[in-house]
Amino acid sequence: MIALFTIIYVLGIWLFYIKMRIKPTPTNVAIAASIGFLTVGLITVLWQFSSPVSRNLVVNRYTVQIVPQVKGPIEKIYAEPNEPLKKGKDKLFEIQKTPYQFTVNQFRASLEAAQQTVEQLSASVTVADAAIQIAIANEAAAEAQYQSAKDAENSLAGTIGAVQLEQYKQELLASNSSIDEAKASKLSAIAALAAAKSTVESTRANLDNAEFNLEQCTVYAPADGFVTNWQVREGSMAVSFPFAPMGTFIDTTEANVVATYGQNVVKNVKAGDQAEVVFKSRPGEVFAAKVVAVIQASGDGQFTTSGQLIDASTIHSSGQFAVKLKLDDESATTAMAMGTTGMATIYTGSGRPFHVISKVTVRIQAWMYYLLPF
Image 1 (cartoon, one colour):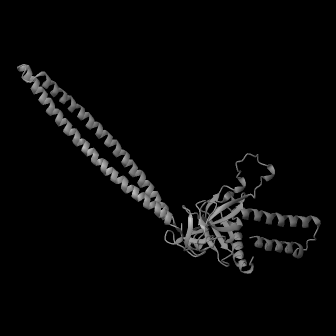
Image 2 (cartoon, rainbow, N blue to C red; image 1 turned 180 degrees about the vertical axis):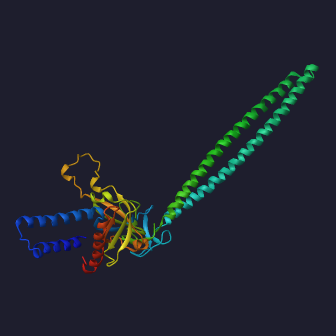
Image 3 (tube, rainbow, N blue to C red; image 1 turned 45 degrees about the vertical axis):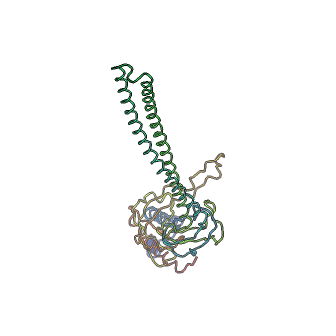
């Protein structure tokens, strides 16, 4: 559109000064120049707000810092740098398992001993129940004997005798005490059984943790992707600290296309708007896309909490917002290398006649990537 206006403008100047033979004067020359300048400026402004163009585009991916959950010397390295790996199937490296296997064996033995203790105490509770029943039966027999002797003595004095009757009475009291003793033994056995069951659960939890640590000695790929910046060597010490990663894992399951625009020109941009993207690594190709979201946040506006006041001279902003785009051809996105750059234009719902400028600009840029290796 700017080129079309330029042609019309030059043709008008030619007609005005050449064909109509109007003598150039400072006034009409200034008016003609002002018309051209203002018109081009207006077209440019309307163009940028209706279909903004960004040359700051990048393809980014998520990365995972490889940090094992257990520590120990590395015995075997399986992964090669920059070679594709499958999530949960391909191994990265293996940490020495011996000390973790010892711990597993120890807790397995402790668990077996604790389970046997539970079985023994369960039997003790059963024995205590039987002892209670025996004591109850003895009490019933002693009470019957005492009551019979007492009735006989009441019917005919001297039949049993006071001494014998007192003996029967003491045997009855002793049987009552035996019941209390048997019940107390049962309560003690139940308490010991509960403690033993608790020990079993605690030991089982320790065994599960030990087995988990043993499994973590083999580190697998956390996602589909590849390892880069591979720092490990066989024999080196792996530690479970985030500030000492073994390497960086690039997740290739998802790639994001993000472009930055001036905060003023994204006022008309909405999710779902059509867009076109060109990549430096794919010269001559134009990819259709859609706006996913305008990220209404910028790192320039983030302040870190500290004990010092913010210095006014350090407050600055590039005045840019990031816009996340999604290519219609998702396979093309996943094929893009991390860090791929390019250009993107968004076609908003306003100023549709000006969209043609961006369409031409994008296609020119796509072919210029053949000529500009930098």
